[in-house]
Image: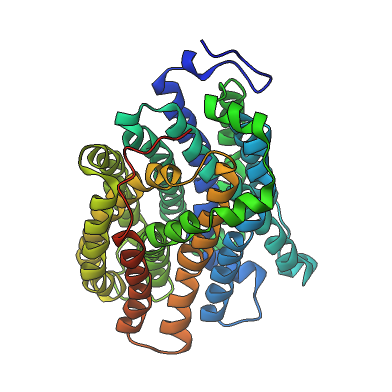
Length: 429
């Protein structure tokens, strides 16, 4: 039996179910907090950028949304070494406390009408803190769950982390739909948008208490004992960093366009007899949630590289038609567009956690992977809603231009993965 260290008791005495739940709970909070900002971008834009037009308000709110992703690489460089040099458990406990605190403060933040220019400055600062914490949380939990899983079930167990993000998005979307249904527009604009930011503190406390009792992985103990030099390790990991971009970029760009941008775009471009797009969005996220563990399980059976190549081609082919349905169609068209994208997106997101962990060496796995993943999300998912909003509203470009923009990520992904070896059989230590 491996001897316990200061980082915590040995991981061998921790059940697979508890490991998976630990991956779920933190990401439920982290991504609920992150998602509600996107879902309430219209109200946030009006409260913090009131001198702009309605379209410009939403554009600026999406820009602040993107800035949260921009802080992730910084967070990965600061928090990643916590996971590598102190332990995975310490990282996961710290990150959930940071995200919960920043989100609670956003809920009480004064508006532009109350404190003037200071309001958007504080909003940006807190959004950066959210992104900073995510720089270590999401990838740290992917590393933790993958390291504690058996080789034959890494994809399935690691998909719990991805499932947590979708549950967070579902809760955020459902909260938005519930508030829109029960409050009039004036109430939503005045105080309704604050509710999800404030109540999320309950998730924070619960998640923090759960993670305090986690056991450290053996790989985490080995990394903490080795303590290699950070910069040389990052430089040596350049190849898996580039591969991470190829694996992750397209999926995340399409995810945020489908489940964050599309609903907000339709809300800011109302039509007669407007359907409840937020309720549809919430319902379709359940499709993603079911697809994620299925994707992890399938990748354990048929290989992650092979499955990811297939899914990348599928998403590149169908996105334009699905995006047109979501941006211009009826409520049924919107639902069908999200369904078409939700299945391949869920499958891909479910397998990516284990796939990316498997290509990084142990020495500074959390830091190198977090940095690569964070940069990818800045260039992929984080700026996708902003670029789409800018192209469609400010530049008055047709939908096909947004589609061409996403194809760039797909081509890079195919090139990066084509010459990769299968990752399932790779040792993690």
